[in-house]
Image 1 (cartoon, one colour):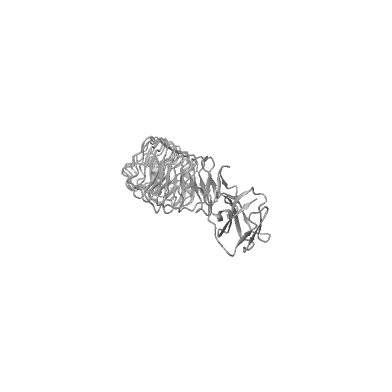
Image 2 (cartoon, one colour):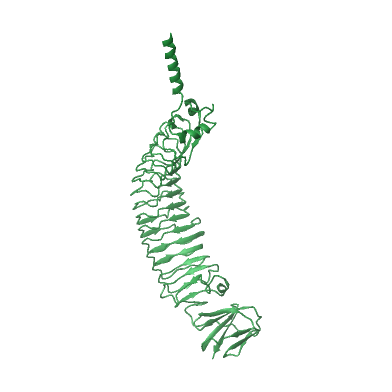
Length: 455
């Protein structure tokens, strides 16, 4: 009888023990015990019945967890977030209800998600993964696997995929042929030599920086707003013919010789430094913030319609530049353009203090000058019976009649180069004693223009 009772006691004890989930990692177990939605009886163990009944989210980011044994008991959990831990392996084959999975910043060398067919979001960046198969995860809309050691990736079966980030891997190629729903696509810092994005009708943002791509055609991506393709080997970049949506292009450090972006209504930023550009066509486009084409071979650029605050054209082969429409230009540089003798501006730009031609924020070579008109030896005089200047010729003090003190004036040399710009004061008198002898042009507020001779 005693033997029988002892046997029954052992069976009951074993049965009770079997009802508890084995969770050897204390850093994993502790937050589970504190969660009243999981540890419903408030004891010091998690029962299998408690684990299987829980259908919410499990998360413990940056908790120093190295072993996730016990996770297999949570068969109804829909969301796992264990970012920034010390996990080297993981088995989620029993967690078939998962829709969201985030294990970024761990030490995983492999990951099997073939059983997790309900997944819509998978984040496994910053691990040590060398391969990853997501062909069974056809419901995926967001997939991030950046900063791993992947040498191949196939998302052709992920037809619902909207967001893909596979940056900073070792991918020589990438199969995205079936992922036609892609809207945000980031594949920079890989070894890609080609990239076809023509099928992505809804593509908004593409970042393929730091690859070895030689040809890129985004002419079919009419919703594209952001394109980053710096540090490739591009000799051809085909942009959409016109766009109401495009905002920003960064295409520096390539081999481009031509860039055409015509009739872009909302462009904000175009940067294509360190290429071999000799032809740039921005006709009909409005660029509202910045253009930078430094270190190219550009001889001419048309900025009509743009309203820039930043423009950088250093080290090109410009011979003429018209900035007269750039009323809000604050930062400008066109140094190292040896053939650029004249830049056309307007009078008001001199009043754009502290920015403008007379400030340190505009820099050009010493051989480059600013003028209202370039390539001409005269400005058209205006005839007036109200205004006058005397004496003419003049030695030192030029008197202006019919003009109120406080008006702006500009003096040009015979070629149209601005000599100085100031405000009329001292009873409408201008001291020209420092001018060299010759013919000059006086403009008052751009309204009255008259020649005079300095003795």
